[in-house]
Amino acid sequence: MALRVGVIGGGQLARMMVPAALELGIDIRVLAEGPGMSAALAATAEGDYHDLDTVLAFARDVDVVTFDHEHVPQDVLRALVDAGVAVRPGPEALAVAQDKITMRERLSALGVPVPDWAAVRDAAALQAFLDDHGGRAVVKTARGGYDGKGVRVVSDPADVVDWFAAVDEAAGDQALLVEELVPFRRELAQSVARRPSGEVVAWPLVETVQRDGVCAEVFAPAPDSAGRLADAAEDLAVRVAEALGVTGVLAVELFETDDERILVNELAMRPHNTGHWTIDGATTSQFEQHLRAVLDLPLGSTGVHAPAAVMVNVLGGPADGDLAARYPAALAAFPEAKYHFYGKAPRPGRKIGHVTVTGDDLDDVTYRARSAAAHFDD
Image (tube, rainbow, N blue to C red; front, top):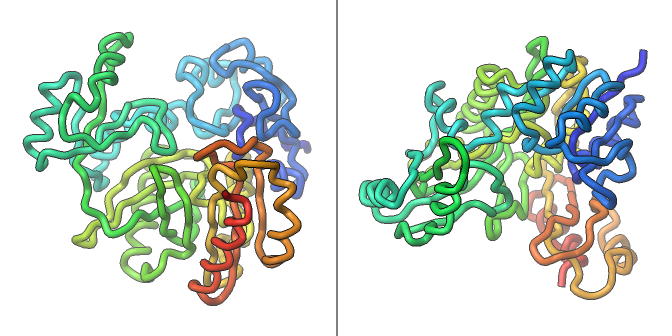
């Protein structure tokens, strides 16, 4: 029996599902937004994922539809379900990932620890929140933000006057999300995978480092996290996955606070940058696991290959020349490193690839991963 998975979105996450699909003998098909996308090598269709006819035509010949991103509109998702298409994760789960205010409402209702927050629709409401939270806060657009976009630290409503203007012009009940500025020791991420029949597995908790709102480095497992912290993070992520009915990979981004609590920052219902280390550092990568999960196949082991794995993103890339010109020096200097590039042109701040190194000593692994990635930056 053929196993056919359709992926909506042609970015690097779809691209990285391809090797896992090939190894498992899965027929993977991609609906890319246009030519030249990262996953162009697997694109079987091009078109607008907002257009119902385009999406229905793409889904006609696959067993299950999954996603490279969370941006497919709810009316399209529900029309797919009504047409008898297996959509994983489903519309109800994706609604939580698509809107940060909905996410905060659902998590709060579940008793999941999150930063203090409010939905604000005007400057007066934001000023009241600032007054109650030390004069500074984080404001986020409810939809569409990623990699630091749609996020601002503010001390005055004037700092987001343009966003309020956009909210006023938007159709429907729109608002901005404001959250307390959390005093945290570090950022963590917990990834789990869940299949429709209920099986759930978890990878080790990882520590993440952000630069300008973009994930720059991931340390797996998170240093000094064994025991209570790791157990609590896994229990929390499993609880969220089960309560929201997530199918596939769920990445839960966390704050470890100065007073030793963990708070949920964001959710992603797909493979996630904080899990890229699993390609080379775990028995089952997040990409293979996602495919297994959405097809309701038994999930793979999440055991690790070495005591330490460090992933460093290549952000921006060389200012002059192309990536290929950097290969000889990098591959010769660090032959143990695993290099992954996404078929994207260099551009300041853009994620164009990542490097992973595994080994026994965290300091040594970190040095080698950073040095290998540095060959591709100017």
